[in-house]
Length: 325
Image 1 (cartoon, rainbow, N blue to C red):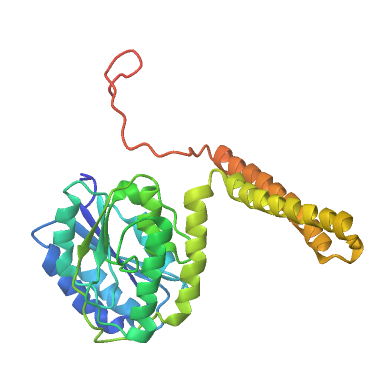
Image 2 (cartoon, rainbow, N blue to C red):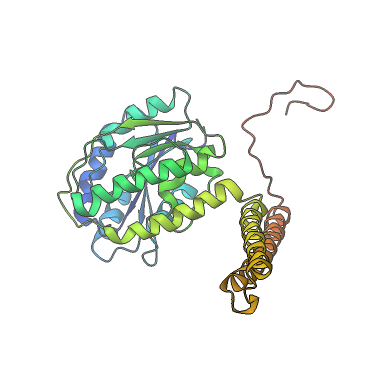
């Protein structure tokens, strides 16, 4: 644990959850008091109801409460990112403010983390959500994410997760990528466990998500897959596409030539000739895109002195080149 700060930081992003803030605060304190040295970071994502006034009241009465207020609604990923950046604990817990996540699960998840994992992800095995707008799209999305990222979780969308601080330090969040944190961390070597957690029906406020987020998830998944597999070697994907296009151009070109000499078919009126030209053009474009992407990636890493690897720990003996500090 970090002796200069709390052992556990609870990050709660929220938007227009005025009626849920007080009960959530009570449940968190009931679950963590006398067990952990903790802080609660509420991130007000541009609420326009009485949420901030309620947060200000809590912060005035409890020094363990910290409040971050956005100027406008930036989204859950941005709110979580801000909370993670300001968290001081060695263990960071994220959960929703709608009271559907149960704070009573936090101690059990931290205990699981202490078994040697870097992330413990909640699994809402028995969900209390609308089947059409939430459950069915969620099941499809979770299956797709697990297949493409090869991270075997049942519920990527569950906000209730427990992280080691150093894992989040290596994970940058953009867009709507908070649900992909386990996948991003896994590609850096993080160990992940999944735990069934209690999921409760919403009793106050309105749900902020529906079918409209499905396309965002798909687009973010494409980005995550690219970052995970090709972020340091983009020429592989563009070069691969260029190779496929080149093979297609060769095949169609041979067919055009064969038709010319075997059947005396006019090449200028042959649609395969146009397809061959298009495939050749596509091949050149893919290769050039790959080279440009390589230049951008190398500029990015070298300009920031950013390594293409993540070190977990270093063991060395004191000596001429390894004096202990």
